[in-house]
Length: 256
Image (cartoon, rainbow, N blue to C red; front, side, top):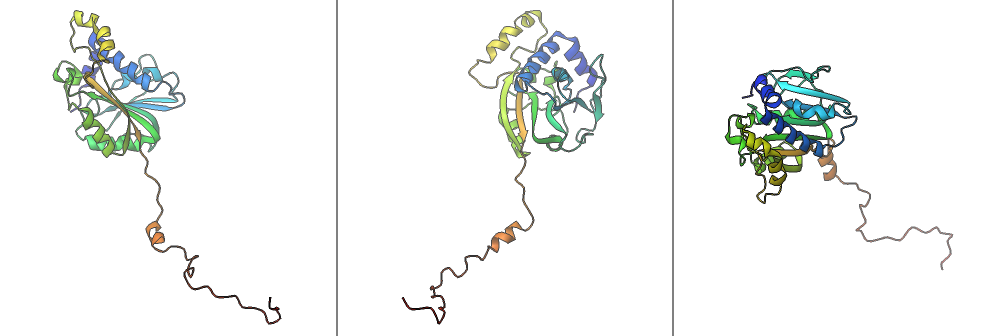
């Protein structure tokens, strides 16, 4: 079940905790995709807070917002690029996207398998997708005061297995958002320190969210009749195993 767009907007744009979470995740995404010049970049769910760095250089930026969630105009002060769409039927051509990020999309979808199939469809060959989901082992998935406390949290193994089952190749996996999901000022003041030290915790994937980057795997092309052609190999070497016979000699050829 998707969250309401107004609740998501209020969290990410009107609360200190939401703005801090937005910055941490967005900075990590920019590290993964430092250059999107000339590319078509899209976000599904409520991914628009992560897309602003790509507005300058990307050929096109699209914000896809599912119908049960609702839509809001974005970005503020610029021509709108947000569109309301069906959860698993997007108004995009097959292979149109170079980059796609999902935030509050997969874990809240009623049909995650169909959603991943749609992700695979709209990505072009070699296209990349980053999925941002609540970490089952983190603190944020256990608190329903933030959007990460809703939907299905994932472990890293679960998410990677689901991507591989839908013909994606996992490229990068990490956890982030180590600060606690609290609005208290003392934790807000310590947020930067906790993020910088959390990455060095020896236990892997202890942050509040998981970020997994995957690329679209395109199967090797096949042609009709190939198995039949293999069963009927070329006959250019037929007879090679027979006893060799001398060539016929012309009657006028002298004996040597």
